[in-house]
Length: 196
Image (cartoon, rainbow, N blue to C red; front, side, top):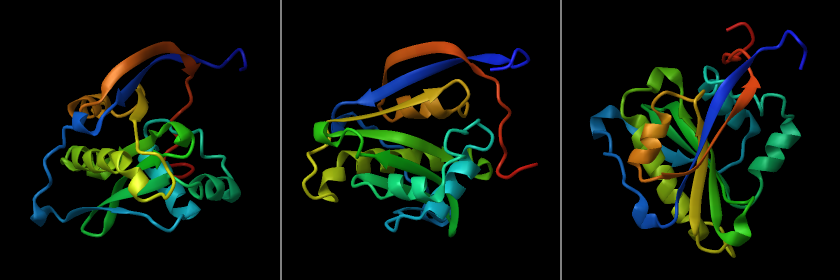
């Protein structure tokens, strides 16, 4: 880091569930709202990168922006990795990414990314999408032959994420099990595309 670089203090919370009964689902949006959640069953680096860049544009998601097509393809092609997408009247509103591959032998599923595009926040979609995603994390073994039953679901969020993120996680029954605070480079939010 150059001497001119600035840092920001970031708090990271690690949350978990250890049984499917710990999930407290959000209310399902009214049918007239046109909200649905579906699994993106065909791995698509382009689609996942679109979701990642669009949802994380204002919350400083930058770690995957330099990934190549091959890196996206490799990650998405691993058994136990799933992307579930919320739609409102056919338009992608947000996503939840389940990583059941990294700790598969232990039956652990990480929610590696979750969020909504800015235009869809504050409308009750996030609680529903998180509820569906957590339920799908708990029944992941039904869709992946040979995988042990899920024994734990975890994620982390930080003080740079959306202001309602942690509260949503806790309302769905996730509990904080570790907190860390440290300095990180204060990089500008990338926006959905250069110059945005």
